[in-house]
Each structure stands twice: as structure tokens, then as C-alpha cells.
Image (cartoon, rainbow, N blue to C red):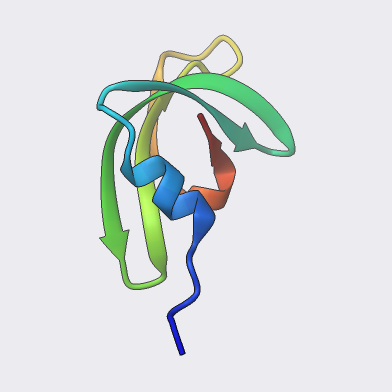
Amino acid sequence: MSDSVDHDSYRLDHLQLPAHIHVRIGGDWRSGWLIGCDRQLPGWHGLVQYQDDGLPETTAWFAAEQIRS
């Protein structure tokens, strides 16, 4: 039996950094930059920089399912 493939993680693992992406925040998709990635205990996470509604640029970790290339 083979391990199941996490398609979100697989797709994002192969991006060249930095990569222009979209990140889901509060149900909305925003443009941003994927600047880092890490396999954490709960799964793959990406470090994303994005503009947050008039606030200064924000940098935060997001799970793979919240990121689209």
C-alpha cells in the first residue's frame, strides 16, 4: 500500500522561492509572496508576505490548503 499524496504540499514544495501566490485569509483570497516553507508536525506550512487591508505588510505562516499558486 502506498502513502497518500498531499497534493497541496506536493504542488507548493516545488515552487521556486520567492513565489507569487494567493493566500486565503478570512474566506477571501489575497495576493502575496511565498518566502519560506517548513514541514511541521501538523503538515506543510508556508511563510507568506501579504498586504492586509491598509495595514503594513504582514508576514505569517499558513497551512498548505490556504495557499494557491
